[in-house]
Image (cartoon, rainbow, N blue to C red; front, side, top):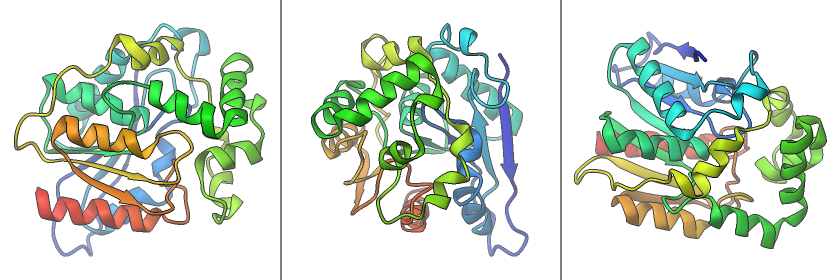
Length: 264
């Protein structure tokens, strides 16, 4: 399966050219989730921005073939994307995308990494328990979506899952049709079979950023990830899981930008 890569080039009006960014989406979606806010924001600040649609995702998704893909196949997608871009990037991975970045940096180099509301190195168990304890109906709805397709999760449930109550529904409506099932093999990998085994190399610039209002990733998982990799940690008050769609998206983007200016 091949990847799709979308790009937003750095604005000619930006004061300085900054390192290129490669955005890696999480489970159940594809690259255009970054297109509306994060990519234009960072392009305006001098970054060439790219977002990869992982194999088995997006417009040409094949649900049967998808379930044969493992986490290592997604890591290969990142390698392929960087080869297409033609230069090293800062990797920004959201949720499952953050786990993919952690696996990538075990054996590959990049300019730096941002793990955004990422699954922790111990895997998905903390996320599963967090959802079962706090939002059992959403957990059930996600499982129904895996069994019967995205139509099994209604819009209101999707809004609760991804964005905060005070975010306008139109923000989610822009990308509602992106949502799809995830690879069963990958979900098994991130639960136990292919979790990160190696810490980031000492001195490698890495940031863990997430919200304290995330229905899928508990704050404890963010702390675990930061400790494991010796990473900088920022908790955004009130931020939900899909921060790139939320009312607070710019606050999160500014935190990422500030960290890059300090650390790269």
